[in-house]
Amino acid sequence: MPFLLLTLLVLAVDQLSKYMIRINFQPNESLPVIGSFFHLTYVHNPGAAFGLLANKTQVFVGVTVLVAIIILAAYRYLPPDRPLLRLALALMLGGALGNLIDRLRFGYVVDFLDLRIWPVFNLADMAIVFGVIILCWQLLLPAGEQGREP
Image (cartoon, rainbow, N blue to C red; front, side):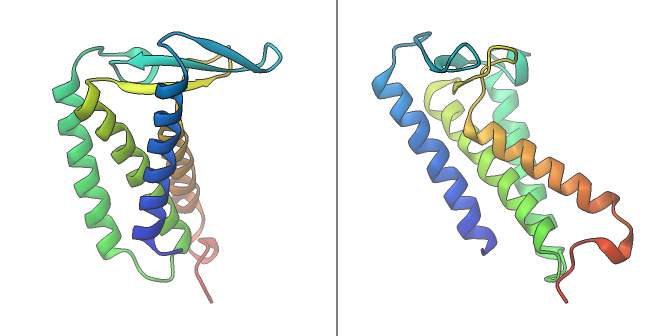
């Protein structure tokens, strides 16, 4: 799937999921989905992961814009035979832009996926984490095993 299309897909699914939560839940409302293991819990996160640096919206906006520029620059120079690296960058960019939109619109990020043993998160966060995992995996592989297309 092309880089831009995947980035926009991640962004659209993230924003749609957050919209559905905002119109169907009140802040801090929780709904059990799978017993006591998984809930949908609508929270406003004014910080970073785990709520760190709460209310530093301008810092997060600046960092996200810088990261987006770096991802776009890296993508431009990425060899075309590295589809998994392209996938990783698209996931990270789509997720970063999803959370950036929240910060610009509301001053906080909408989180709603609640595993009860971990802070509440969202689909953008998942895309970023999976993108980073794929990126690290690809960068740590020996040169001959890096998922290059034949």
